[in-house]
Amino acid sequence: MNTRDIDENVTAELARLRDSIDNIDAAVVHMLAERFKCTQQVGHLKARHQLPPADPGREARQIARLRQLAENAKLDPAFAEKLLNFIIAEVIRHHETIAAGEGDADADGESDGESAGGA
Image (tube, rainbow, N blue to C red; front, side, top):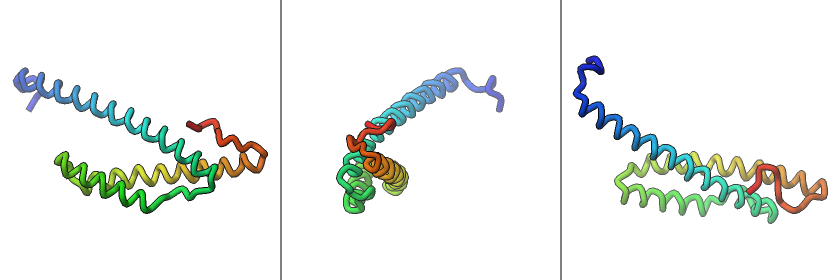
């Protein structure tokens, strides 16, 4: 089927829906950016106080919470869990990087906890 053969009402509805999807995608990216700004601050706090990058108890609570939110929102809880696990892995990686960097800064006599990529 050629796009010229599609009813213009269908084309208009498709464009409207795709615009909505694009707006939602933009919102998701901005929300993730905000989330990572917060987790970077957590990473600096953990590093300053020699706390481990991962917190398995909190992670398990967050996964359970997100699965419940997903069920309530009619979203596949397994998908939501996979997404959160991906995000958690990235956060832990950031926290490990921050801890390594702040450990270096402490060795250099700089202990203010700030770095170029900090919060």
